[in-house]
Image (cartoon, rainbow, N blue to C red):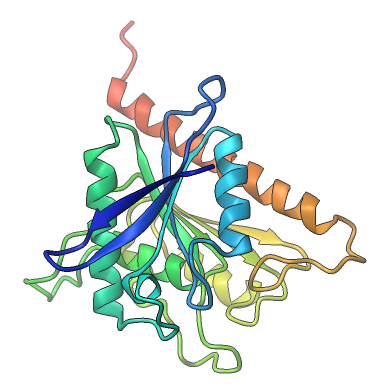
Length: 245
């Protein structure tokens, strides 16, 4: 069972966070903070499956509710309030991280907000908030545009995400196809696209697919762990500096 904690967002508001600890024998010494999508909360089947599965693979995974979800409302808050909430949770995690690298991300809307707080402010915005100090971003089904409205892109901030970013996208995702996402990812400083063949916006595949839904989810989780391990390895090598001969 995950550990339940309360995260204070401001003087009057707080949200619930759940920590899925990694086994000591397999722990990677890394934290992954995941936010839920617009249609669910941190107790949705998707969030529980990924948080449980990733923690079992060595990633200490933390989920949380946005303020509107915590209050029992269905309609998401406006973007600035979602960002404020996410930033507060990142600070809370940082205060308890014990110098462990922190990755952030989420499902759909949660992924979008994570990428937005990881983006540097626009050059002309002298009062913009600095990018969150995180090691990387994991997007599980990035909502590039609303279904059926490909002209309403949510990508203007993505080239300003300097930290490494992994986008996990289903090939049947109506919120952003492979053809639409590849040029976006190519414009980013350090981004990678992992395509789930036959997957929808929740990365679900048809039962008649070559891989079962369970196998597909397991493959996605292993890819996330592989990517996180590679990113952390690069950071730790850079911190040590060049070898002396």
